[in-house]
Length: 189
Image (cartoon, rainbow, N blue to C red; front, side):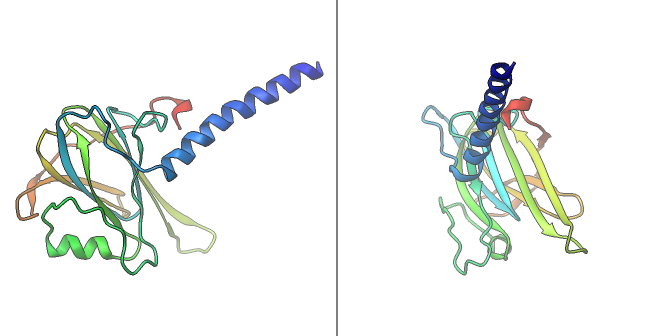
């Protein structure tokens, strides 16, 4: 009986360790363009919190190759790191990305295949013992050669907004459809 208990405990710790490693990867390893990406699109992500991405997927699974952190907020950093790929930027977007608690990056993403994003942020609540949590997972299929701007905000609705942008960095009026998504499976966390 004792051996059976030790075996079950070891198995539980082993499976929990996989989940822990997967979650740790999602918050510490940076997203990278897959080597087999082929056609790509450009995206500028401006977010009031963390954004992580999973290429070639319409659901979240941090074990998938090339997945990882795309944007981290620059809390208390005077000159935030910003990966600049030369996408034109309006003054309004530049002001937004420099706000305390925001972050931004310009990235290449594979085109013509689904790409999943997860946004996460917490803000202090009215009471010191509570925090407001905003978590949003969405997916879309980027068009080859297109340039996008995605904005994630922790507001009353936990907003995710995606639009194409023109050569001057202006967002086009029509939103690009985002589909809500979730984890691929319970063990994909």
